[in-house]
Length: 119
Image (cartoon, helix red, strand yellow):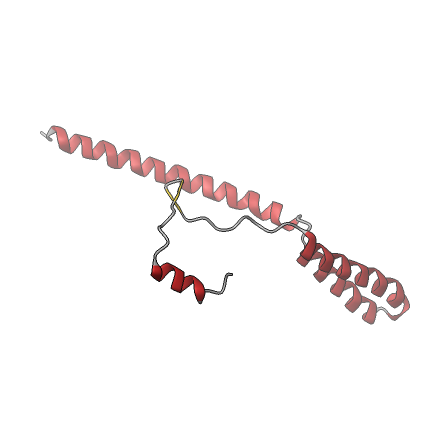
C-alpha cells in the first residue's frame, strides 16, 4: 500500500504531465495563428522587397518596365522612409518570473557596458 507522500508525488506528476500536454497544444495553436498574421504585416522590409521585386519584374517585362519600375521605386522609398519613422520596440528588460530584475550598477557592469554593442 503506497504511503501518503507517494500518492502526493504521483498526483503532482500527473498534474504536471497534464499541464505539459495543455501547453503543447496552446503552443501549436499559437504557432498557426502567428504564421498567418506574420505574412500579412506591412513592414518596411516587406515594402522594400516588394519594390525590388517589381523592378526586377519590370526588367523581365520590357513593355511594362516604366510602370513597374516607378511603382517599385515608390514602394522601396516608402519602405525606407517607414523604417526610420516608425517607433522602435521598447528596450529589453531583464525579467524573472514576470518581475523586472534590476541589478546594482557595479564596476564590472559599467565596464561591460562600455564595450557592448548597444549604446
